[in-house]
Amino acid sequence: MSRTVAKNTLSLEEFTNTMAGIWTSCINKGTLDEAPMAYKEYGKIEAYLEPSVEIVKRVRPLYNFKATEEKSWREKKMADKERKLAKANAGIL
Image (cartoon, rainbow, N blue to C red; front, side):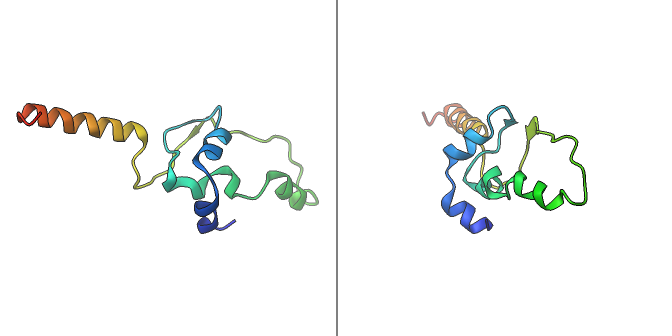
């Protein structure tokens, strides 16, 4: 799947569900093209490799980080708090 197809067809809910059990703070629209569903299925990759390698173990990530320009919900929440605090300190609120 191309990055454009991934961004246009995958959902954040689907992305979030596939990341269950993996700590991450970067599930957002800006990283949809990095969702697990955007990659080839591991079974197909294993089938291609099977004639030349022996797969003894498959590892699963514990932590996931993707750089993106879009802020995570935590960053948005903190920025909103900082804006409100700055306005309160300036006497705007």
